[in-house]
Length: 417
Image (cartoon, rainbow, N blue to C red; front, top):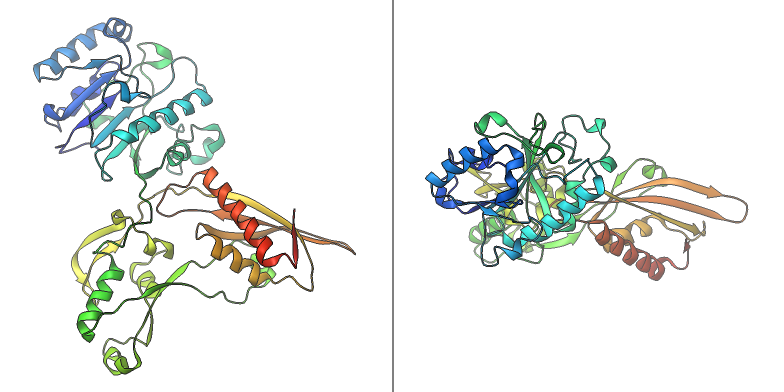
């Protein structure tokens, strides 16, 4: 979890400082800033003997805790500071469990803490007890529905943070650690099967491709091989003819493609590489890296790249592509409309969806209505981002944009409900 630390870290909500003490096994004390929500005078309720011992050990190592620090208002204490790791161990609102209060705690914490990350490689680490977080990584996700959880991933994404790692908390790695604060008392609480969630800032897609991106590597290789500059382009993949029966199950709407079209006079040369005049780079890389979601190829987030030991393929590619957002959220929106059976073009309808946003990944027919005079469909659209934070409000805006586009392009054949 936290080993070989050589950059500043911030610990929040330490009640007895046992986790801070445990980190000394992995970290030079000069990098540690540890804090407590309580004032020094109010700490005794958590086990005064243990706290006294831990504080004495920390002071021996030159660590002076900061008291009265609210994790939801870091601006009041660390205005000019940046941290590589911000760690919040098993946060919770005092008293009996309350979903709304704990969600508000996470929301306000993320809103404040993201401002204090050193860079896009830095992370916010939040440990939660078994079942609290509501991600797909819970030991038994069916045991507690997402709506009954703290919904940590949804709240993080609303604050432009993405979940990039999630793993089980192993208490044995932190010999001094002792949980405390159960119902605002010195009692310990269960940490078995608890999860550590690592969040990093979401990077927008307005930056150029990283120089190590396989697409750039391929273009550079081909430019050198042919003796003139080769540049491909992002293209919208053509839709195959779609029938209504295809939408009885979720149908994945094709994303972008990337084509390199070679000059005709280079045909003989590129045959040496077993390429055609029209080289579909996305299809080649999807097969090469066994990508389930080809949209990942078009991410401008440099963190999707993973260096590999040996170059692969004739293009001398030395970086593969990995997922950065490990638990992307799916948001559902339903779209209903009356339609004219003699005018409605299903493929044109899908094309408008495709061109509205690449974040609309799947579509499914969930209901239809017919009588002598009127006919209607209801489709479910599923939004998902493979690399960026995507919150509900953003999908609502895209859904509104889609409705406007449908009014422009299909007003002759549908009436939106």
